Image (cartoon, rainbow, N blue to C red):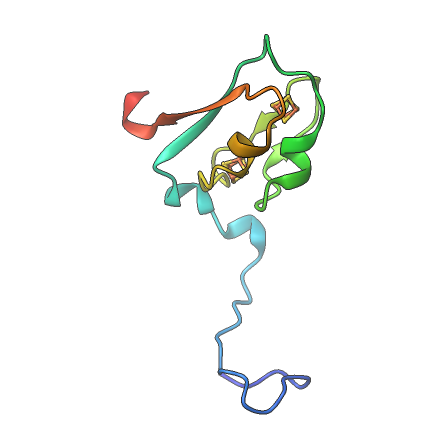
Length: 93
Ligand code: SF4
Ligand code: SF4
């Protein structure tokens, strides 16, 4: 794999994928599934702002999590101010 033009000397040689993010279905990494309690969601947008996969969509007051890209990292669960996102084991559904 060729090195990038602006890579500093000594940088470890890494493989840069040419696949698009849309193809990178990180949802299959997940063991735990975040579930939003719509009755307690305030629509504050924190989960949308902090999700490292950008898989939280704001089409309505209660966000929609795209599970094909949610890797179950738990950032939204930790950051949700009213704590209305809970993890559920994948095999429980
Ligand atoms: S668990 Fe992680 S990847 Fe999934 S919606 Fe929450 S912050 Fe995003
Ligand atoms: S962080 Fe929690 S309260 Fe805020 S929009 Fe997301 S689910 Fe709703």
